[in-house]
Amino acid sequence: MTINTQNAKAIDAHRARERRRWRTVILFMGMMLASLVLDIATGPSMLSPIEVVRSLTGMGERAPMTDSIVRALRLPMALMALVVGAALGAGGAQMQTILNNPMASPYTLGMAAAAGFGAALVLAVGGLGLPTMVAVPLGAFAFSMLAAFFLFMLASMRRINTETIILGGIALLFLFQSLLSLIQFMSSPELSQQILFWLFGSLTKATWPTLSLTAIVTLVCCLVLISDSWKLAALRMGEARAASLGVDVRFLRMKILVIVAIMTATATSFVGVIGFIGLVAPHIARMSVGEDQRFFLPMSVISGALMLSAASVLSKSIIPGALFPVGIVTAIVGVPFLLWLIFAPRRRT
Amino acid sequence: MMELQNIAIRRGGQTIMHGVSTRLSPGQIHAVIGPNGTGKTTLLRAVFGELPLETGTIRLGTRALVAGQKSRLAEWREDIAYMPQDTAADVALTVLEVVVLGRLGKLSLHIDDETLSMAMDRLTQAGIAHLAGRDIASLSGGQRQMALFAQILMREPKVMLLDEPVSALDLKHQVALLDVVRRETCANGWVTLVVLHDLNLACQYADNLLVVANGTLKACGTPKQIITPDLIRETYGVAVDVLHDRRGNPVIQPVGNLHEISHEHEGMLA
Image (cartoon, rainbow over all chains, first blue to last red):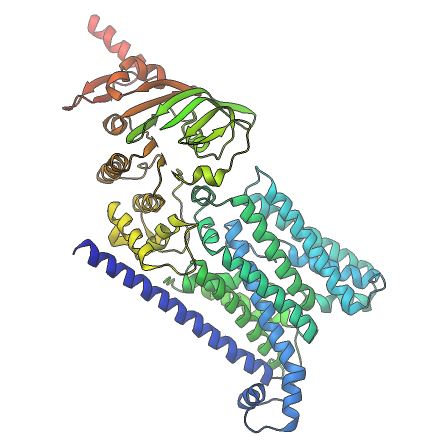
């Protein structure tokens, strides 16, 4: 075999691999859209998926009530599930990348716990005159960013390695959980109930303005992440090697940390604490399309969106008519899924 | 030509290297040898600009790294390829993708056929073209080292810094890799600075040996000129015989513990 035919063959194999990955991404995107339709269809009054599609596209005949249920009531919630899932998926993926650790995620590093504490604090002491609808997300966002700032300070120090940053994050998780328990311990049963409800994570708080804000922030952050695709891929080869390929490792790490913090803090502050997606979605992506960031990032986004959307469907259909907080459902379906990922035979493409 | 003028390197409040001055001419392999922990890796990292200089200057063409001065590292590193010692790569990428990453900075979101074909040529040079589609994490340590070597070949450098590039390789691949290094160094006029632990490989492949001990440059010159039993004993604390191969290159043969030898001598005398 001459060198030229060998090269041509290897290039063809690479192109085939790229096409296979695109097909996986598109397949998941299809599943995500199907889940979106199902999510809109389920609720106190069940609609048929066909009716939902008709209403969304504005084509075909449907009952007059359908449009208002679909578009005004359920669409913002269903889209919020996708956007928040996407933000958590992307955030988790890049946390794992910059810290070179498969257990990193905004949740495990204390940012979600900080958001929970921020929200609880606002609920307990009041929002400085702001209406609760604004003050609670703002408090959650502020404390989540505070936690991120602490991690950022650690990351900016010269002789701090990734393990230390993770350790710092886990310490934050414990700290904010304790502070949160303290507030709950000291508050009235009604207030405690309110805090608990926020912590469960719920999509019912979604409105068009909050949805648009979250969607825009997520989109902009993802575009920045995409522009650093190759550097992030190189970083996964190890710090020394990334540096030898010309990556300013410390700067990249701090930049990505800020982006992930903004994206996940925004998402968390509007829907409450939803763990697990940030941890598991990147693993689904890694196992299905590998860590070429051009596929890894979109796949993490789509897997996250699909997971939260599916959890939302489930939260409404466990007991018809009753709505379970989506944060609870996510972890309950997430754990068996994670176990399956761990024990399933590995196939990397 | 790369010129090191009286450089000293400080790390963690301790001066690791001092008083290193030498000229490294292009088209030659300069092998750094010396005991563990004497600063060989430190020297390479300093040349790459990763560790600041405490004193001195490193010049390469019109560019220079000067102690105490902020330098534009991206510019300095443009023509330098550095292969760190660490060959861990627990990442879900294929060998071809890993090699393509060598052109980081010149890559757009779509990888064109030209880049892929160039990456395949580098893999062919490293003798592992058949592994192109394999997952990097599934390779043996030696294969991975070859793949990472192919990766830095993608940088088309003028200066090559290799930190123990053959540590995980079997004899065949050691020779294969160093043959590629020698061929490309001559052909492209690279300044190649390579840390080697195997003294015999170093003697065989180096045009110029840099012997590092106690944080400074102890000796420097062609292997034939400088390798003597005294130098090795002073540097490593080991008694050796220096033989010569058919091309006249020194071959170093340890003769075991100094203490035992003196015993044997006593026995023979008695």
